[in-house]
Length: 110
Length: 116
Image 1 (cartoon, one colour):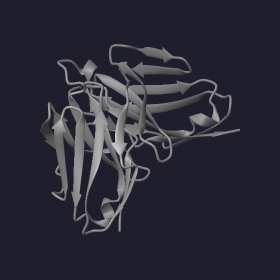
Image 2: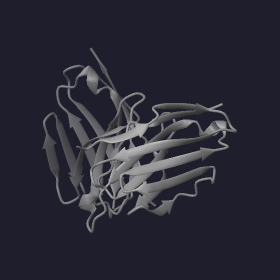
Image 3: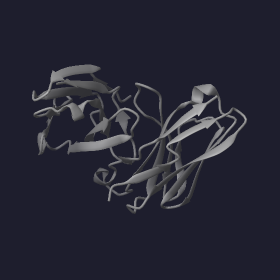
């Protein structure tokens, strides 16, 4: 079955770059997503990447996809304290199915 | 507009109560979802509605009863819940298309449910 793995915790200083990593097993994954969840809130879609892409950049966010190794990463440039949250990687073969990783808690210290 | 709204934000109920959670979207999406999320865990899919018909039920106990009265609204009726049902209940919506590109799910802020 599908499986998505993430490291559970990342701590960085304000202004540094953060890199959150994710691996997945389903070779039929077509779309890969990053969601952000702040304490007590719902999931905010940050970005997504199609499996036929290697990289996607959106302002401070850069997503890299290594389809051969089934590895996805999210880089946040100039990390701010407001970026502190849980980040979920999710994969989908399409058609209303999402498999989430366990989430990476990002803690940004001043 | 990529907003999904949920009411109430918080709900406290006893095990004998009947209550309902509500979800609304006006993005023209024809798929709507209920997820349950326990603390420090990823969301778990409960139900999927596609074109107002229940298409996925992930073996959820019958004390949870979903309803999709129209394409913009999704309800979750709760009855005789247990304390372990306390969680954040998230609603999401997406398009339904012929390609995966339409399946991006947008989530609401959730309802924090506490069962006493």
